[in-house]
Image (cartoon, rainbow, N blue to C red):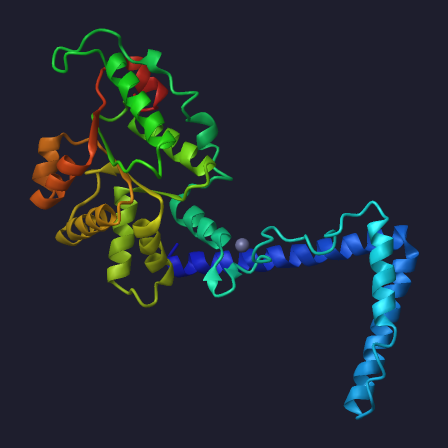
Length: 326
Ligand SMILES: [Zn+2]
């Protein structure tokens, strides 16, 4: 699915939402009419007067006051205020009260549109995605990690992951106040993506915008943009989000096929977000040395200088089972 298709789908979704809002309004009106028939009479009367006034105005006649509309409106308001219906029963019918399901709030894009674009591209959302129900700080189980000391690291995997867990909880708690980037590294199957999901879910719940991309998917978009940027408004939009969202997550860096173009773009993303002090979390199965071999020196020097490095290690078979990699 291309970016343009995604935007088309989103527009269609908004059309459906507006139609649903209209029919909801109709149902509620029928409900009110059934319970307070006088309101139906008033509405019919107001519309009759309105039509007559328009006719007179077109044929050049005088306006002759409001024809009683003011009184009728007041009577209607009084009836509804005394009823069980909330004051905004007929107007509060949209999914998004801010933009009335148009995606635009004045000249700006509504937040709900931003959220839908993020959903469509990143498969992440504060509303959907049962992944956060399964993978969150409450379900992260450090006892799956071995408690015996790793000779290379001098601590046990459990001790290490406990510290990583605490670091990530703090990262979320301080988010927006303390600027920090995280780099998770270590072999596959040790819970790096799980931990990223914990962070993403926590921040989404706090109303932050989070864009999640595997490095492979991200660089595919970059290529898409390069070959046909103008026709591809959706991919361009994604790149804006990648630059501007509150937290960018790049999962599985190093698994993708890196080209000079994607390497340049990765540098651009990392550097732009550094300059604007917008946090990034990256996970990679590569060691710091392997990263250096695969990417340019200037990328790696930024990852070293400005990222808190978090090692994931251990060989626990239960971990492999848990993360579905064995
Ligand atoms: Zn909206």
